[in-house]
Image 1 (cartoon, rainbow, N blue to C red):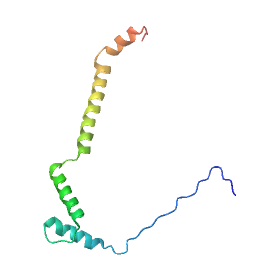
Image 2: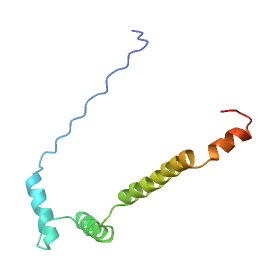
Image 3: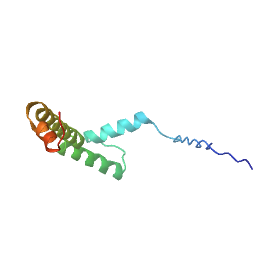
Image 4: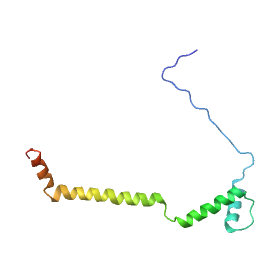
Length: 103
């Protein structure tokens, strides 16, 4: 038995290829279903498509974009307020004098 202190085994690779998958045919079936034509989708796939279409209609702008925009506004405001307090008020000087330090 070998004793190896700082070496780990490499993970085994997993390669799965579906036997009968045609990406072009799948895309064609989805487009047909979106247009309302007869398609060979399962009930589960059709339900997923209806749900995703409904969600796209309800949320044109994603939550992440709103969150990024809001956080950018908040952080920008804090930075601008900090710059204003440091350079245009005497708050820092009063704070230093309150602690007994000299400039």
